[in-house]
Image 1 (cartoon, helix red, strand yellow):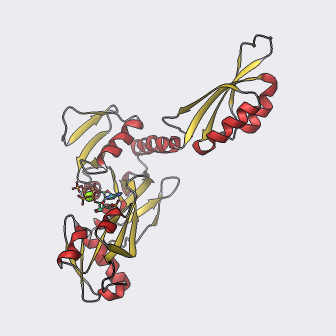
Image 2 (cartoon, protein in one colour):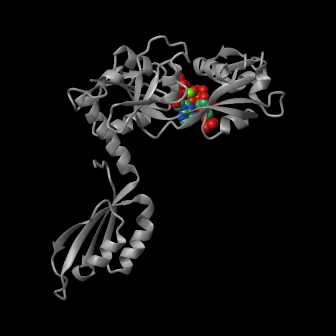
Image 3 (cartoon, protein in one colour):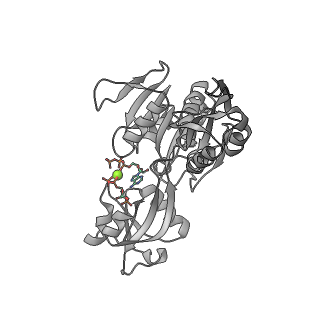
Length: 314
Ligand SMILES: Nc1ncnc2c1ncn2[C@@H]1O[C@H](COP(=O)(O)OP(=O)(O)OP(=O)(O)O)[C@@H](O)[C@H]1O
Ligand SMILES: O=P(O)(O)OC[C@H]1O[C@H](OP(=O)(O)OP(=O)(O)O)[C@H](O)[C@@H]1O
Ligand SMILES: [Mg+2]
């Protein structure tokens, strides 16, 4: 089974890190290699441009792909969100398949939101300029790296604008009379601000997803990879707490722990006075750690350890 992942750009490093944390260690010898084996003999990695990954998956060159939702929609694919159990669910976003000129009806299934590369595709125009709403763009020019999504957006809002395709530095185009507005990615908003551009409308919300072709969604290996990635995401905002407590205080300790299920309790040697002691382990939300520790100390827990969790399979 092959997974296509970004070969460069801002999505490359976090994607490799995620695969590693999921236990799919890459075995590669040189940088810029196009292909890598993993510790699992049945899983290999293809490195491709983020924009090409949807096509690799649709064509069957890869079974899974990791890239931005914006790239999947721009590829012209119909993007379906996976239902919880894995069967294909409803269509998401404005992905009627003709958006970016795609003709084939091969859906891409959005299996998992991987939680990074979070950004918005927005329509923006110079601050204090003539363009204050999308209607002002009738007969005007819009520059973008996403011509398919942009064309589809203008069709939906019923405004006839000319689309100019650029491959980068889109924010510059309104200032050199190439375009009256742009459709581009924003996350912190810094680039728009520096270029004195104001957001007029939101076109698409995006983040990095795990995509599959619909015919491989139920495949056992695909499920395994998905579970491994999910286990990393599930562990991210959890911490593992370990502590000792007098056996007599165990009910109080249990009351304080908002853990996943009940805590694990083990007998340990009695203290110097011969009183019974237990070791208690529990998984708690990262956001609860601070207050939980205060409460645990108050009920007599000692030797409290907090550690990160690599993966959590529920
Ligand atoms: N500022 C941003 N914040 C969050 N996510 C972003 C941002 N810019 C881009 N992305 C996401 O990353 C994807 C790829 O963008 P990136 O610029 O890294 O790749 P690229 O354009 O193919 O690479 P390069 O620009 O080096 O050729 C985008 O499609 C989008 O999903
Ligand atoms: O809202 P911000 O945080 O400022 O991010 C937005 C910028 O990030 C992306 O560019 P990128 O850094 O990928 O450069 P690129 O144009 O070379 O792809 C995007 O094209 C915007 O220009
Ligand atoms: Mg970029």
